[in-house]
Image 1: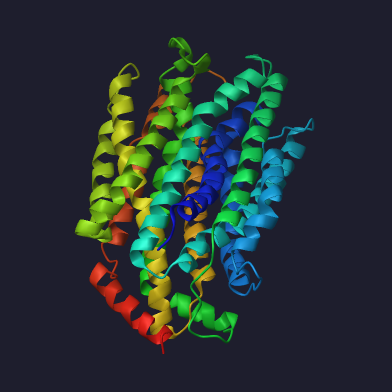
Image 2: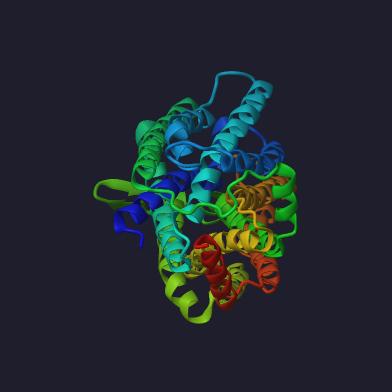
Length: 460
């Protein structure tokens, strides 16, 4: 039985990862176009190139982590040693050097590529930790719930407070150099908090599950077993599709409120003396709703199963996303209500996915005798990044296709395209995710049989 403090400690890890991940998803595109000074098409291409490369870097990290042996375990040491590099590279990513356009593009490629690699190096072992903290399905469901709850809490805080911090550090100035300074300083605050959270995760968690097979298998064997793991392929497709859905919605939100809703024309909302912008509140509502979805996922999936819960959530999200397209700029109540409902659905699927990846590790161990936990969980990170790569690249390219110009009045065609980013285009991702997960074979009954068989082997 996993104690409460360990569940919380495990949650700290994804709280740290998600704070930066949400900054990438919600703000990095508009940072590069409106603050850093790159074109939307160049940013879209950069996202695709760097993230596709980095997606294939994740399995490399998984393989290395599987072969790591220390007194702290295989996966926890990465949290300790990479927390500070994670923070420093994150700060560099949101720093604007005083160099020409070509130099800035090269700098963006280098820093963003390094950020994604460091993210992989710490997040893949962190994700794999779920598979070795407990062999029990219920414990894993609970850990997944704590993980995603803290992830969304971190995202909520980052998205709610980030732009107010940017405005405060920049003195609410419209001068571009002051805005650049404000962005860098706000990221420094987030980065320090992330490093502390990773240290807390390392200190509070433990690794308990040991593989049945003691001798180390070859990389060729690990890869062969992974490629023959049919449930893994299904989750890979479903995960990529779900992240396309999320990345397009998050990446276009600030554009939606800046250029379609014209949030600057709306009265500012102040809480505790802090002025908030509509886009930040919209994103924060989404994260709060994600938390509710995470909380609902465990009890619902325990009653009707993970597969049915996932299918229901994604079907509802598809329908609501299509309806979202028809809202006018002044229908803020409906915009926020549908954000609340769609985000509940989105939040509920990710703890299910993480728990399913742990099930895939058990399935692999029973059918092949090989438990490549790190390699299997690295695929979840790979699908996450590959989904974001596709979503953000499409966002950048379509912004250019629709005629987007930074900090200018947009044409009706551009505005219509921006509206589609929060409605029709994400719905395509949810529909694809439904089609994949419909074929997922590891039911609760099947997992009970697998867990029983593995326990018998471990006790021999």
